[in-house]
Image 1 (cartoon, one colour):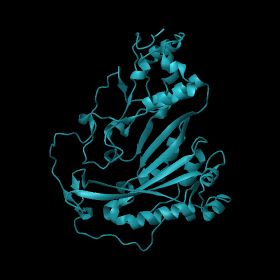
Image 2 (cartoon, rainbow, N blue to C red; image 1 turned 60 degrees about the vertical axis):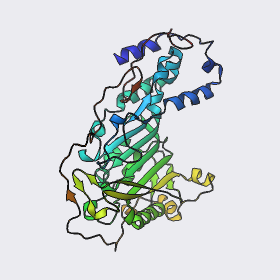
Image 3 (cartoon, rainbow, N blue to C red; image 1 turned 90 degrees about the vertical axis):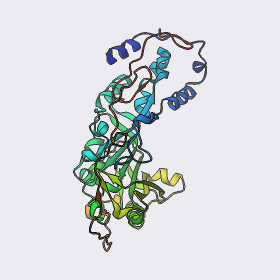
Image 4 (cartoon, one colour; image 1 turned 135 degrees about the vertical axis):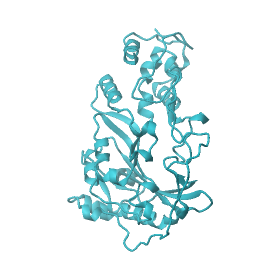
Length: 367
């Protein structure tokens, strides 16, 4: 039904909208206005907030993302200009993790391929540029090639890719093992990076008490790593990083990690973000790239050299790092509900075109 309505709307000519102020301004300004209105945001409905007692709830992810699509219902001319924008502007999120590390409603998300192909066919292009793609990945998924397979999806061309490694994604975090990165996945990921990807961000998170380890991993990454895209352009790390901190629950999966608590029931987290861009973009902003990484990029990829390890780091030894917490219903769901989306106002599964009622509205009518 969605496809039939979508095709029907686009198969007829538009009303000129001579009396609509939006169509009196230059197209670039109108496009900026439409993009602002159709950018996604966290679902504000309190009943759809995630419980804080999960390892996927975090400052940037407290609820599913939502997009207000009422603009698309105003007239055919606006629909024609904007029907694909919610999909392109949305921060698409993928979880390369075990089921308990991701919201169940998003652990097996519908494939993007259908919507990507639809937009590609409409625009007559082989690739569809989306603004943002965020990936939460456990190390074993990264090393098994899951990120390469995702980025190699047909038609997918993200401008910004953000890879988040959470505290619970590092190898053997339960045993407080030192942080580390293997490098068997880097060359494969680089080989499928789209020419549209000019920003590849790594968010490295661990406990605040392991700040020194996070900083050392980030420093090694800046010095050693590079990503040679399939078009030959190399992305290097900016010398400067961004740091942030947050405080969250120490309990998830019915385990309270008392070993790591900084206060009753709470953990302090520390995040460093390392951003990779083309060398020319970094230097244009008066930045610099690592000489070691630049020289390495001129030769063959050396997997051994790209490993990031911290020899000599000790771990915290405790007899019982966590306490088992009985399941208690706290009035909230630990996972997002399979809620019903009002098709007249919002849609969340952006692989589908929203149902747009054909009716008169605002300054014009659906002609």
